[in-house]
Length: 446
Image (cartoon, rainbow, N blue to C red; front, side, top):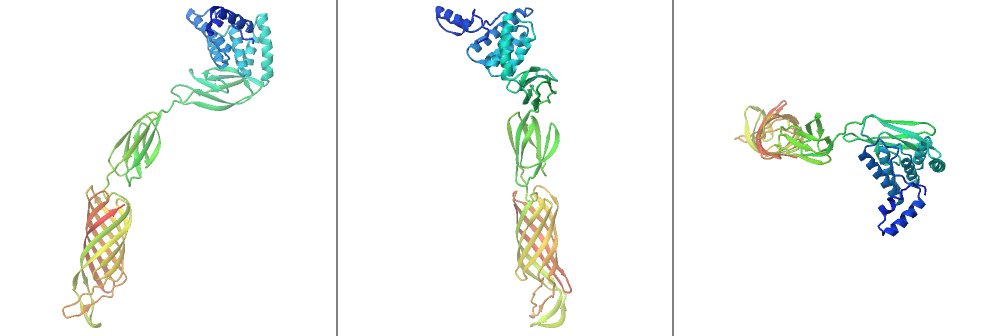
């Protein structure tokens, strides 16, 4: 081995043996290893405390090398070099540690630096020998320098452990990943190419301030598709459910169509879950609509009179009757104000009459809604009313008639409402027929 070591402390520091055995071991180590000088003779300008630290680091580097822990030896050697770079023995020892660790490019770098200096005859001989060996092991090694736009940046390049910027050394020509970190900043990373035979100068730009973020998961009550998010960076509208990252801070979340305000406190690297629970009345819910209604009604018709199936030629201008009907509505509410419904009405006297209508809600609050319906009906709207003398007035109504309606609804829950209404079914064909239904029923929305 050619790592320089001191006989004064090395054996005693690392081996727990008797005094005689320690002396023997120290002599053996000193025979196997050239001297590691702990005297910072070229760093005479250092303050006493700094010089003491330098000596401690050099000692630890020597001990780690003897133990075969070359990575630790390199770590202490580099730290010693950061205090003072003028001592040739310290740099030589660091170069040998790199060489033993298989990092021949960095070994070559330090041997090249030593070769450029005026060395003692013995040191020059050692440097020349191991420099030649490093050049054979790393023939494509090339020099590089990394500088940074800001101070206190930690760098990683290739096989090297993290170290402060600036960084200088040698690596085999080729591609490497350069990474830079700084407290409070976003990491920087890029692929760099080191070319053989040139001075590769790499520059790390100023790092972007770090976004301290946390994760947020938002879920909503049925029927809430969007929500507004107010926070440190302004307002935005997001679909629900939503999951993502936000900068730390306090946020206000407002569900679509609601005045309710929810608060979310986002903490760094933490998950925050928020449920936007909105109690909606049936009038505020969009979705499938199902209504069941009972409707006592009355009718009016004018047309020719028939007696035993034969027309008498006379006309009836005022005939009325009362019948009961039930209706089923099925449709879709596009939003809380508009819906398209299909209606099937089963009447005691008239049979089955269908209809297609649009519903508009011009006003609502938490409990009540007033609605207006308009559409067309399908079926024969006749009035088979028997007169006291047995004659039957019949209309010749067409298959399509007008539907008009108005209703008041009271919300029982967020799914159901009680409905009170008046519907008019009018045929404006050659023979006039009118039927009115006073209805009461239950409406459900899903």
